[in-house]
Structures are given as C-alpha cells and as structure tokens.
Image (tube, rainbow, N blue to C red; front, side, top):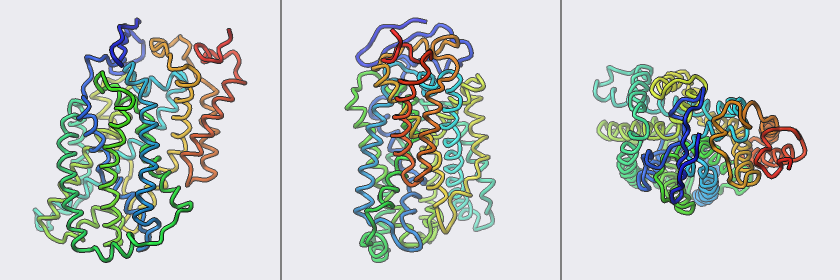
Length: 466
C-alpha cells in the first residue's frame, strides 16, 4: 500500500491488496472518476425531484388543513437545505480527496468490525426507500396500463416486480448510467412539473389558497419538526456523501461543491414540495400518484404525468437508494458489484412500502424518517468530530484497509456515543436528528478523551499518548 502524488484537490492512493475488501471499494483515483460539475449538479436535481419529497409536501395538509402555510414552508426548507449543504460539503471531503467510499470511511471512527453495525443503519433505510420509490413508480405504471388496456389490466404487484427488474438492470452500469440518466431525467422532469404547477394553479387556485397559502400555520414545534423531517430525508444521503464525491472529477473546491449541493436541492425541493402541498390541498389525498389521477381526469394527461413519475423514481433510486446499500452488501459478502446490486434490488421488493403511505395519510413515511434519522444524526456527528477535531483532516488511508491495523475491531467509544445520541433523540422524536447529532458528537468527544485510554483508535489523533 502506498500513497501517490497529489493533484489540485484529489489525492491518488494506491492499495496493492486488501484482504476481505472487494476492489470496487478501493480508493477511486482522479483518472477513474466519472462525473463533472454539471452532471454532478443534475444528479442532485434528479434525486430531489421525486415522489418521496412530494409526499412530504403533501404531509403538510392534514384533514384538509395546513400545519404550515406557504411562507413557513419555504423558510423551513431554506434552513434545512442550508444545513444539508454544509454537512454534505464537510462530510464529502475525505471521499473527494482520497476516493474512499462511505463503508471504508466508517472504519476511521467505528473500526473494521464496528463499521458493519453503522453501515447497516445507512443500508437498511436506503433499501426501504428503494422499495417505496419502486412501489410509487409501480402505481404510476399501473395507471398507464389501465389507460392502454381500457381498464382490463389493474395489478400493481406485477408492475412492482417488473419495474424493480428494470431498475436492477440499469443499476448494473453504476455511475456511468447515473451520469446520463440523471441529466436527461432532471431536465424533462422539471419541465413536466412546471406544466403540472400551471394546471393546478389554473384549476384549483381558490381551494389551494384557502387550505395552504393563507393558512395560519405555526412557528412552533411543527415548524421545527418539519425541518427535522427535511434533514432526516437527506440524513442517509449526506451521511454517505463519500460514495458520491469519490466520483466527482478533480478541481472542485469546497465552496464550489457546497454550491453544487445547495442550488440543485433548492430547485428540486422547491418544485416538488409546492406541488405536493397543492395536490393534497386540492384533493385531500396524501398519495401524489392517486391525487394526480383525480386532478387530471384525462387519459392523455394521466399517461403523461405517470410516465414522468416513473422516470423520477428511477432517478432517485439510482442516486440515493442503490449505491450505498450495494457497497454495504459488498463489504459484508465480498460480492462483486453486479451480484451485489442485484441483491439490493431483490431486498427492495421485500420492504412493504405500501404500509408507509396510504390514501388518507403519509404520516407513516414521516415517522419512518424520524426514527432511522435518530441513529444517523449521531453517526455523521461522530465522523465529522473524528475527521476535523481528532485527526485534523490527516488520515492514513491505507490503514483503513488493513485488517490488523489501528482500525481493526470495534471502537467502543463510537458505538456507545452512537447509542447515547440515538437514545437522546428518541426523547423528542420530532427533533430527533438535531438532538442525536449534538448529543452523539459531544458524547464521542468526552468518551474518547476520558475513556478507553489504551484504545488503538487514539493513534494519530489529538488524544494519542505521546
């Protein structure tokens, strides 16, 4: 194992051989990276323009009344996106500089064995989201089939299985497919949503204004809780930021990377949240697919809108819900990429997504996000504390790949801190992410400084015994 020559921002690191680690997980060199700045930005637009985020917008409307009005919604969104972009930029730096994926980055804090536990807390939610997005796409495909067959075909389960099979095939091509699919889908979907916005505004402006725009809303706990849902929705993605930044080509500064997160997410979230809230206001139904079918009671428009829903589901799954769990499966099973990505798709079939969102309420989705983000907040806080405070951005990357090195086994301080942070988060689940983030990071600092004095994980940190 040896460290290569530094480029402008990217450091090429060569790993000769790492027993038990599949080669896909080796550091990505500058010459091997796939995404330029424009495709990288379009990737995040494609990820944000999806039915999951639209459903979160719909969740603002409960029993025909809005918990937040339009102004409060946008204030909450800007606050959340600002925090998301900052954490993305901080946590993606190790992956961007060295090319290591998230599952290897975890070893820095949790250890080779401990990374298994923390990686599952990223992989499992992604698989559930994969299933949810696929189920949403299957609902849209079913609407298309009903139009084309005159109502003779109506079977969401068959559409679900077929759609998942298509995504498994696409995902086998990795970031090369993501680059082109996301760019195309992003442009087309934004144009489609502008059209949907126009139709809603011209046909339902009165009821939308009454139920959402001019609603009293609140600046209290529901406002801050919605920000936490925003953060929870992206918590899994910016936790594994290294998986994406390791594909970004050299020459992009921290400020520019932050801009590549903030701007696309604002554009994407702005579109889907507004339309989600408008749909729920107009119809009283939380499921965007079913609401669209009611609002646009026209076969041509139903097919048109449903087709773009399917494209959106493919776009978000390829970015957010396939890569990370596939890397986790590779770490656990030592499978190569294509078999691992196939297994990820099969597990997505078993996620029972229809339980999370029903016609009358999408609260199940919001509760699911808050619960798993209680664990993700502490993990990202621990990673940032490790990299920026303990190690001052100096990590011997080859050691991360050694089974007998300083990162072998479990780092008890990190695991305990994660559990303390998650436990604190559950005290007030509406603020789970931020509570877990603060308590987890603080606990990790105190446990590392004052406990486990002979731990090998202190090697190379400010707490190393001199």
